[in-house]
Image (cartoon, rainbow, N blue to C red):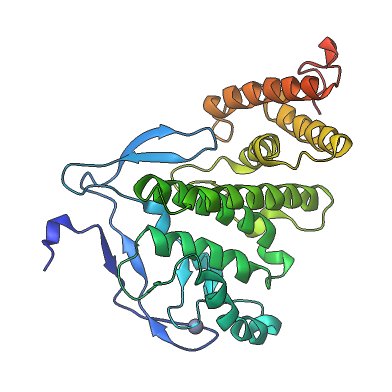
Amino acid sequence: MEEQGKKLTFFQKTPIKCPLCETDFYREELLTGGGRMIAGPLTRDLRRIYEPSKKFGEIFPLIYTITVCPACFFATFPQDFLSPPEKNKGALLEQSEKRKENLKPLFPELDFTRPRTLKEGTASYILAVFCYDFFTKEYSPTIKQGICCLRGAWCCNDLHRKFPNENYDYLAANLYRKARFFYTQAVEKEQRGLEPMSGMKVLGPDLDKDYGYDGVLYLNGLLELLYGPRQEKEKRIQTLTTAKRYVAKIFGMGKASKQKPSALLDQARELYEEINRELEQIGVQIEPEEEAAENE
Ligand SMILES: [Zn+2]
């Protein structure tokens, strides 16, 4: 069939047993060497774009991350798949039909036993968002839901590029708004000690680099600015002001480091200015001494 050297993925030889429905299945893994991954630019929301290569064509590393049971559509990051909260396993299995029904209008022909396409990839993130509703705080489910919504939106952008007449841009906007919601919740829960983010070792948001908690604070600000609700002026001012304070913390400590790459520092400064401009447009007066001085 396919020429060995041109393969992009393979299926693991050892099956995984779904902890809910006990179906055996094989995880698909991405082969990364041999010039398959040509890193392109970084987007403003910290996504790494990959250039298509002559030999392998387009590549979407994100679509293989989430482990999905092809029978009951249970879906999580690999580290959580085999050990969901014992007390919620029944409920998670019961929700199986609901998960499938919810996805049908968006993706009528999903098949998680064959090589994934962008559609299975996008769907895998949406499924994981459903499933993490049943995970307890030790798993840091909220930030995981945020990352899944963000990556789902990225996959939708790719789908929209390939199929411009199928409303995937609408779904992308929806997922960005949900990402905004979960990021805000995750930061708030972390700040109040209700749900630490330690259940997610690598905060991404993409696969190539970990921007850590600074990356989370940055995205919280960016998503609030671009996708936060605008109906109530006072609420908008309050959420943007809070988001801005978090963004200031990123460059408040100054120097670039491994956890704080200069690219993120520059983006954070730019974002800070943009939030200020947005606040001014709504009618908030920005004091000059407020500029970057309000850290820590
Ligand atoms: Zn299953």
